[in-house]
Image (cartoon, rainbow, N blue to C red; front, side, top):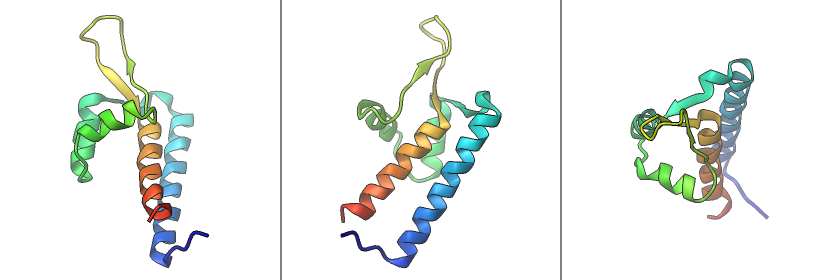
Length: 98
């Protein structure tokens, strides 16, 4: 049985609502869901995460990268929705596996 504090349940609800909004935005405007690797690093830094977390998410198969071109120096992009879902899964893991 999983026992949650009320603030943990509130945080879960907020995270899932945020994820729903991101999914809606991806449906409405698919191109807006793409984010370059450098921008992901900035995003992680702004939320207090280390950039190496992205590599961990990719190696764990939670996030997939896509090169936006055929050239070797074309940008690598990720899905904002996929990243947000992976971050939420990590938070949920903390609640469930205390």
